[in-house]
Image (cartoon, rainbow, N blue to C red; front, side, top):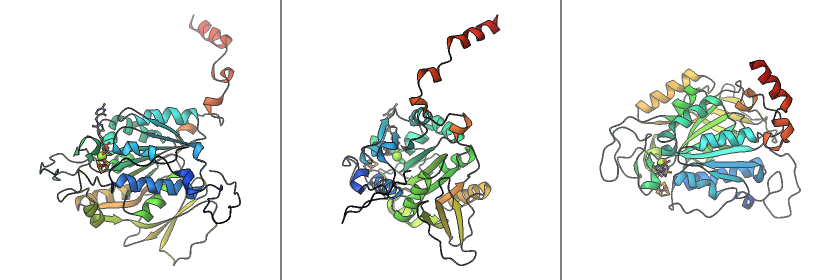
Length: 349
Ligand SMILES: Cc1ncc(C[n+]2csc(CCOP(=O)(O)OP(=O)(O)O)c2C)c(N)n1
Ligand code: SF4
Ligand SMILES: [Mg+2]
């Protein structure tokens, strides 16, 4: 993230690197009006703008689905790649390892991640690749006309009354169990919480997995669906009130003793968690898994920053990568000379 501040031209809203919000927009959306995915796109645009990220320093990736179309609608100066269905994690791994200086964001769907892409998702979460991974979760395959996806709750119904007999996969539980270091759940209709989580995720060095409940207004917004706008709105249970303070703002938070908890992020930004009806500690893995199970049993969605670990090394550090992007190294630094190969062959004799 750049800290170069340019004086704002009079009357224009600009961020800390002197860019206007328009620099963070993409093509006009082709998704249905009112789709939750559009609301998430708006929050992504705002978050990059407010953090002052240089748009051409971003890699945006996705798989297949209505959700996976979203990267076309933000940051049109960023580098984009749309993968085969469910295969975005391996592309993201290659892209991030090739250039660790870039900021990477991947957009997936509950089908793209939980069905065809589950194998890739599982291994991505184990690796702690520096990537913001967003699941736009509507409990159905929106693009192919609303069949149940693996995050649909047992007993929920399709528009035509068909009942889902299978238990859901909770992607947050999986991500926490498998080693992701920043795991959150939010709702496309919760503007404030989603913005704070997105900005914090972008400031984290490691895998930040956000499952964002994002109603499909065309196929999954009826009574009987537990992913409809009104169901999620009525059953959202925020664990804390979240505020994000970027590293370039030196704000002291005024609060009463014991009412807030601060989480420091790798770039010096902070999340301030204000206590609601419980004192939630996102660094306690056991508590995170417990709260997810308890709320799910009540048919509720625990939202907010569920789990955070700043101690684990990210994938690029584990690989001992040099600081310079691999993609920019000259051939002599990436390929051993013939003498090394000869020596190896000699040893095999
Ligand atoms: C290999 C392959 N299998 C199946 C499909 C059909 N297909 C396209 S999108 C999709 C599911 C999308 O669901 P989700 O990821 O939840 O995205 P949404 O549209 O709900 O946002 C499926 C099964 C495909 N494109 N490619
Ligand atoms: S079909 Fe559903 S998920 Fe797809 S754009 Fe329309 S509302 Fe969104
Ligand atoms: Mg879906």
